[in-house]
Length: 277
Image (cartoon, rainbow, N blue to C red):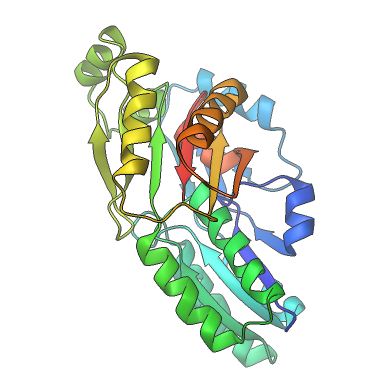
């Protein structure tokens, strides 16, 4: 069975990994004040990050165009689509609309998965889909297996900077200042239904790492033979440190480390880390 995997650009991966997995990406739009940026391969990410840090206005994003999804679906013929959590973005709704357009204009065979996650979580789902395809699993069983996988997947993230939360009005200036002064590392993640929940407020890097390890241990998930994805925004040393610590305590068959792309860099901000397993 030959299927293309279509993702939105919040799915963080390298070009090489995208080629290996047979993944096509549909871009989101990022906004810094009045300026718009397309999150595709032409994005100058270091330049974008510099402008983001300098921006004092509201920052935000827009979901991919349904027409872009339609074009990708028709070109693929048969595809599985993985989108950002529908509780955080309109990407899933755009993909559904793109699917209806594709049905009117072609013979695209499409199934859309709401990742209930983002960033590393989307990549982990894409990896799992490709594994099932490679093993010759039929479409209906893949849909069932991935649905269950998504329901049990865990996603956690830690931010080093909170500037964009302040610019978005999601964190008060007083709270942001206290977090910085007290060296608090907010550990957040999916609540299992695609919403963001708070899982811990450790102080400093050491406590943050131990809390993340405890969350993995107490997750109730089987780690033997499974894959973990860690995405990072300009923070490869921490990603590797976490990978080494996790490898010593658990038996993941693989820990994939990838840099964040534009949209994940916008929200994770500089030095942010995302884990999914």
